[in-house]
Length: 239
Ligand SMILES: NC(=O)c1ccc[n+]([C@@H]2O[C@H](COP(=O)([O-])OP(=O)(O)OC[C@H]3O[C@@H](n4cnc5c(N)ncnc54)[C@H](OP(=O)(O)O)[C@@H]3O)[C@@H](O)[C@H]2O)c1
Image (cartoon, rainbow, N blue to C red):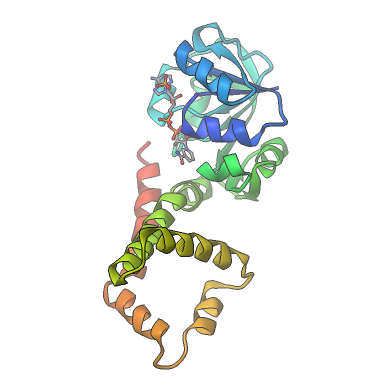
């Protein structure tokens, strides 16, 4: 059995993704836990009644909430998905034989999370069940990966929304523009080539793509994304 501490958006996405596992959700609000149970097949336990002895735990609460966790017994394994929180910080609040950190994303529900994993083979196995797990070599790398794997869907949502808005600006209906944009992301992810190769194969001399691309470069979109990843990483260092 896997005990997920936290009943928020990520906990729910993971529990839905791990639908073939026995899941226990642990939280401080019984109403929310009941709702969580209804939406998944998880059983629930109130945080104040939870004994972590020999449990395998996914820690899915807000990073600042870690301060409020205090357990006396020792868990088998703790896998934290909290942004930024180091294992040394987690250890002060919950004892475990093994600690891992993972950074999944909200696509876990659709078994499409890309998850960075630092730690045990078991953590890697769990997150491989809800998408693609990628091993990283240190907690610092996990924090950098957080900016891509964890925050990435929000950054791509901005790109998707802007592209769709562009279609609407030119006269497409919102519905068609969204449908095309969603299909575009599916198409892009199917091409197993590097971004620069994809770009070069689409952009022909004096063509439409080259014209649009120049506008993106004029507006420093590339630089803005590079800095967004750096700033998200920097923020994780302050958690
Ligand atoms: N959202 C993402 O895309 C994403 C991706 C990767 C990792 N993460 C990480 O996943 C964790 C949860 O994020 P989320 O998006 O699921 O947030 P969320 O939906 O806001 O859920 C937050 C959870 O933390 C609990 N919590 C907050 N304050 C608490 C406290 N003082 N004591 C005990 N529990 C407390 C909440 O309990 P109540 O419901 O009782 O308030 C809730 O279960 C974060 O650490 C985040 O860094 C998120």
